[in-house]
Image (cartoon, rainbow, N blue to C red):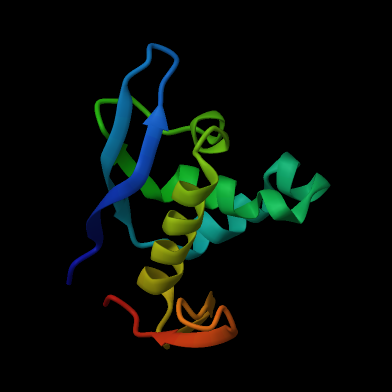
Length: 118
């Protein structure tokens, strides 16, 4: 059974030294990951912080960074955060995920069903 998955972020994390880190690895989430992330003090203050806490737990490698913390995830570009949230949902969902999208032809709002990766 595959439990880790490589990814490439659309933009990449720009570290304080100016290096961009795009290649990484995400593992499947455990029940404990979801429980502990839900108990994070920042999540208790603001539920919107939950993806940051979860991603900090399940991203096991990002470029040459020695560790992934919530502070690192907080500084992801919005497009990278959205990409990784989608990847997390696809990896950890047993069912298809329905995503909202904008039609490139008519600019109307549509829904797209995306099958899980595993």
